[in-house]
Image (cartoon, rainbow, N blue to C red; front, side, top):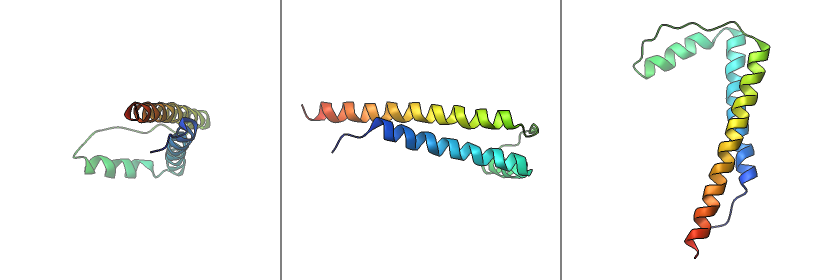
Length: 91
């Protein structure tokens, strides 16, 4: 197996997480997030009383940036581990 680019894996994972959370922010803005969360909780056999805060653009941007950065870091770690295991298996 070939080595992988830790940077590319980080960008892909960070991008996926950022887009996922951007979608969540849009659902909150559109006012349809609560029914979706209720359905997801029901699928997990959970009955939790909660409320969603009003949409705030600053929080939405921070959510996307932070989750994108965390995804990037995790992707880099996964790529590094992959390459380390790959190198070890060829010794």
